[in-house]
Figure (cartoon, rainbow, N blue to C red):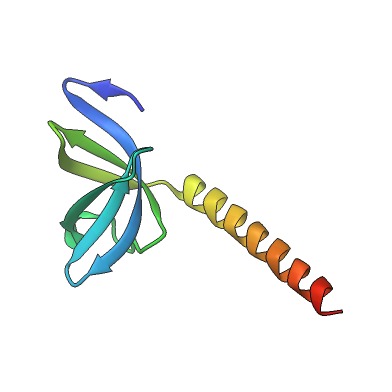
Length: 92
């Protein structure tokens, strides 16, 4: 993603929530970043994709990336359906 005045936007997924903290996996390297759940967009939950702005490696803000979240969920759903179909065929 682009960078402006020292800030960098990257994609991240909410991996899990631990109490009042959210653990994000940021960028293609999936680096863990722990942030207060309260700084994320309202309703954000594990499995949701975000666009996060980092400045000097520190979290600044996040936006929900609904299209990425939907695309990833469709992909996972398709893979799960394929596995279930395969399993049904094997049982016959």
